[in-house]
Length: 84
Image 1 (cartoon, rainbow, N blue to C red):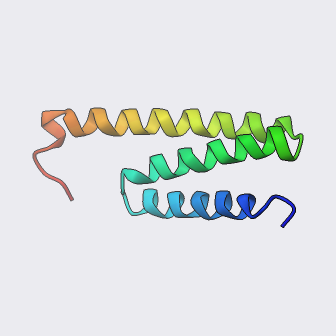
Image 2 (cartoon, rainbow, N blue to C red; image 1 turned 90 degrees about the horizontal axis):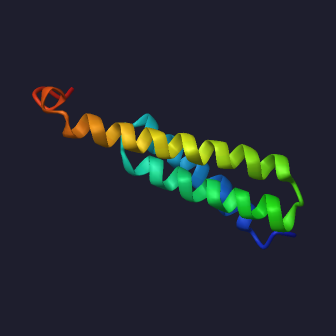
């Protein structure tokens, strides 16, 4: 518990975000991005790991891109006709 359980919270949010995305739930992107921000803060301020911070910044940007792409597809009329 040297990181006050914040690392466990970040891990749980990461897994939950992946689970939600696997079930095609848009909120998974947001949950994942929150976990990425926590990992970035842990990497920079608690673990002195720039690799962890940079890696999670990349993941966060990928999540943002995915969320924007998902929103564009939701707003595209030809994608709204039939949803499986």
